[in-house]
Image 1 (spheres, rainbow, N blue to C red):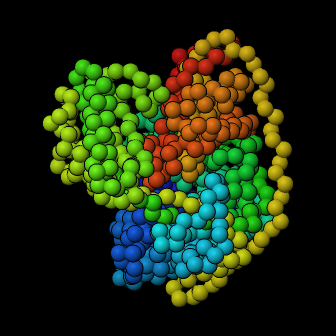
Image 2 (tube, rainbow, N blue to C red):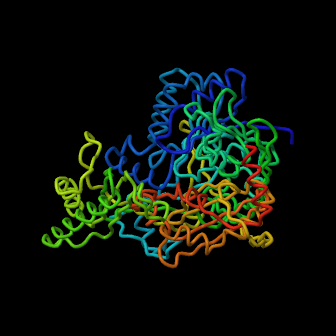
Image 3 (cartoon, rainbow, N blue to C red):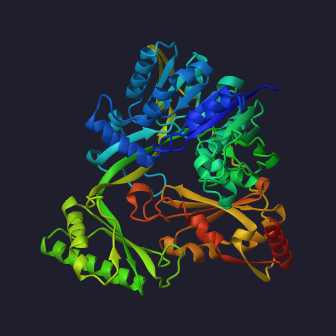
Length: 604
């Protein structure tokens, strides 16, 4: 039970800065930290659709996260081999074989003897006809599957046991297609500690560790409520987990880097995009994070207790992306007196002109029009004039020609506009692009055959199916307290927000455990609905959950993102700023809580 492994998280999305790998390798070589694994998460639903289009253009060598090959492997391969650190990445995208081929070529060119494993089985495009015959329904909306000729990608979210099996076979670099983000970390834990398929608590704990690492510097001060404490983010450290065999772990970062590892930064990442914290569904386990405790044990050292788990779902989540017309938009600025009114008048004129031409051309109406005046209060749910405003105008239409008419009229109205219009030049006129929508459904586990190729040695894997376990009882809600003093929420709490499809997720963490009853009493679904209502569709459901272990509340808002991801025309289609809107809200709390919070804020 005394064994520990050290895992670093080096990437949270395709396109993230390439600074993590050299930072972590140097920290290991200098003796500052010891690393056994570096893990990389590159994939999101929108990324899968982009990679799918890349593979269509280049079926043999396209469709994977090229950053892993060009920014990680090529420049750092000798250091990776010298240190003996194992790399695990979901860089394969929709073409893991091509990614593996590229990495193996570099290994051979360098004259090294590193085993490269490639895990496949998640890509279901070849089974599209058979899938359509089963008439799957969207797991959130109940909608029917889109027409097969519109589908761009179909990928099942696989788990961690194939990763562990590749490591068992001696792989030094593991490349997967679509696995859940935390699987790259959990796979290392399974391999090192020998955790079994029914070790639910351990699997949930390893998954939590992966969740803390999967967004890189979001755990070490990035996107943190108290962002000033992170210092100069140009030198921010990437997270490292020291994992014990019981599933508990300590989160830290390399010394000499900026950023911050604190109860606040780690707690914000734990509640990020988890929905129901007692039913966080993954291929290997159903996680319950509600009783997890997060404790500061030293400078930039935070201990996270083991989680609870129960039987894994009997089905895999599968995400299908498909084309649904076209879209385009742009940002323009106005400044001077009444700039918000100017932006409104300009955008109204553009849309009216374009609509007249659409009708004259028998092209039908826009399916959606979005206008947000940034600086005019639209993001915060208020309206106020300003001396400077950015107007974002965007549309959707079934045909690219319809979107093209909007773009022509947007630039063609520049001389008829109210004064003060300006725009960055040199970037070229925007072009229509496909609207990519997400269709999520469930695939029975026994339909999926997973293959692990280790430099020509082929292994197979099928996940075991277990009977569902009953959900645990909900934690007791905090006591209800009456408020008599107004205070800004940010004085009492940290918060982090993100998306779950078309749902907005806001996690709120009390800065002190004693504040939790006041937060629970004040942050009712009704209040959240009033504050966030300008983002929500009519009668959108709002749920809230309490996590007593971390003194947290998680709020989930349905139909909050205009379709979410690449399907949305919103300025913030992934709810990244939702927490900031809520934190700016004034709530009523007991005078004793307000006094304590204000004193604590003054001291800090």
